[in-house]
Length: 445
Ligand code: SF4
Image (tube, rainbow, N blue to C red; front, side, top):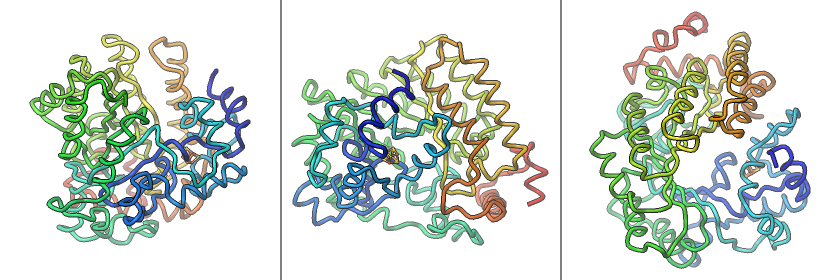
């Protein structure tokens, strides 16, 4: 059954706004004590007094229970706007609600539909971040998720003059995102390990560790060691989101530590080539990243490298060539060795692809259509990848604003110029040289 058939024949029958992620999936930031169902709804706080009583309340917050009740009644929770916006485009658009529901068994979905929304559900898929330690400071990230970003703000002061940065991502060090010092006990981390020992190691199908950079957190190694010393006790797939910004000896160390573990997968981010990729993801050495991907593929320590492309205004120029490079790897390592997803950036909205002038967007629509036509019968390209490319084409062609609260285009473009001017000064970069196709437009802003 393809994605459209799934949406029509299964998901819509469960309800017009039902999404399995609300019950069975969570992202939990243990450093800040925040959670959400998937990446799209805004994160909300987990009361610390609850989790010491019952670690399952790391996931089962009042907010999620209310959202579940709404979905059971066919109402759309406002936090899930990302999906509603895509679905309202028509054209058989496939939102993440489809992808994030179809991974679960039909019986589990029907069970959730009828369940008391206040029931404390056991998770099936979970993404956690232990802390925000990270050696990168990507342009679309902020100090909430990266200690290198924190340093930028602490050393150089806030980014100034941004009108559309309503949530003040770039103006302060987000100290609330690291509630506990590294030499203190973090009750959220302790609750996670308690829940892991009591239930999660049995109920979870996938545990994904994100960050910060997870390979820089001691808790990640604690978990890897748990899997090593408890082999056979858990069938949970361990997925690690890493920026792969390490030299080859650190990579080898990682490969050696996971070599005997049967269920480890690696997720990494990139969406452009060479200098443009390094501009977007400050700290990245593209060649090192690529060599580390190849090193992982050669090692057989993991089944698949998942490349998550964050689609922003600056990646579109080299995105088709970057995708070609990933497909090329499959000739040597097999179709499943590397897979990609295209995830559309909405925040910060001034970095959305929708800030680009209409004619530039249309140019990229044409380039992506060409890529699609060249790959639609390529046996090495997955159907879900073609769907993602198609979705991006529609998004660039049809959607006008990144999200409902976004400022008008002129203000977003001003912020775009303002932000990258300061980013260049702080990081020693050169926008006009790196994105020469956009130079005239950029200079005119
Ligand atoms: S944003 Fe979409 S995928 Fe995420 S929980 Fe809401 S409906 Fe599900």
